[in-house]
Length: 136
Ligand code: FAD
Image (cartoon, rainbow, N blue to C red):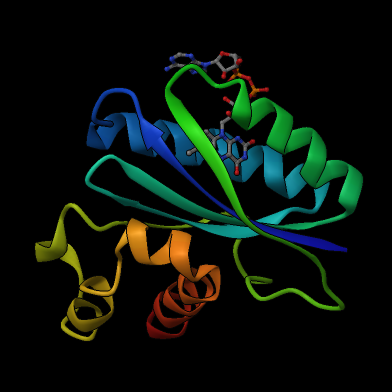
């Protein structure tokens, strides 16, 4: 099984409705092919973890990279794993542009969402995602 973590940038801000639609499609597709993961959206930045069978994850990555709604897909981590980190989620999601709807415990982790830090140290991105996963 493979686990990947990438960042990308939305070409235009996603509205709440567009995010909900993206989630709906993603959850249905991912469930069908055994992919789990988590997606964070802050400012225009997406940070997404995907895990599952190698071929399925690579096929999805090809679709995601070709998606005209975002650009600048940068792979931070790609590794073989024994088990899942997000096994409960066909696609966990948090819109960090709306901190007012997040419970208190999230505010500290949210301040750690810094794309430049993630490029310098991709394991930091992994830790931030795990922090949100554990707080959910
Ligand atoms: P459809 O939803 O019918 O889409 C067909 C085509 O239209 C695709 O090429 C799609 O890219 C494009 N498209 C769809 N909606 C729009 C729109 N509003 N504007 C412009 N073009 C559009 N998909 C998943 O299945 N799982 C994921 O985990 C996942 N994560 C994503 C994360 C990000 C940051 C982004 C931007 C997209 C993600 N997607 C994900 C969506 C993915 O890129 C494809 O759009 C989706 O998988 C295609 O689903 P579909 O085959 O049912 O086709």
